Image (cartoon, rainbow, N blue to C red; front, side, top):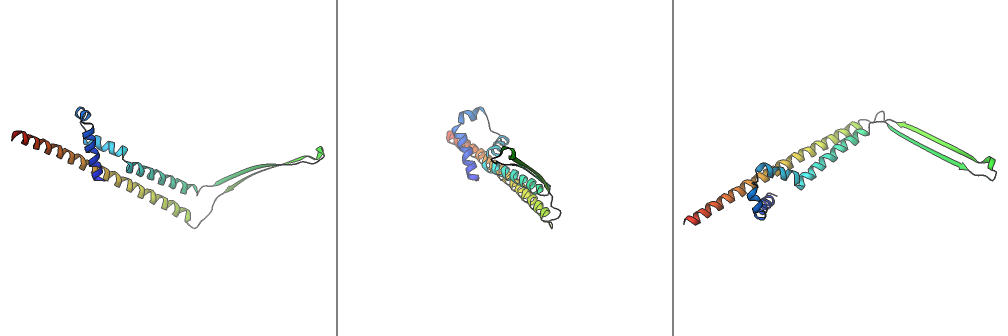
Length: 156
């Protein structure tokens, strides 16, 4: 991954040398761009969001559930006076009174999974920042070494 970042920054410098001369990249701008665009960061953010949603879904199981329904049945007969319709409506409310601690454990497990996803997010973030900083300083060192070699060649 580190080599890919180094290669990407190096190619960026080569391909856009004219633009780079007008705008100098700072380490802060490189880190900001990497954090916004790196696919691993996007994946880590999505994973944290999904784990937060799972916590909400686990907590929703402990709330009451309301169900409702309605129906209409009509029976036709040959005599129009005996045509009848039957309406039916129902509402039910369900609440689990006690489930031997399963609900609490399910919520706690979802929270632990969310914490793990957040830890992975920060780990990914730190690795990307370290990779960009390393690539930035390696590129900066290579440019300086090239300038020194060029000056030595001209002075020889």
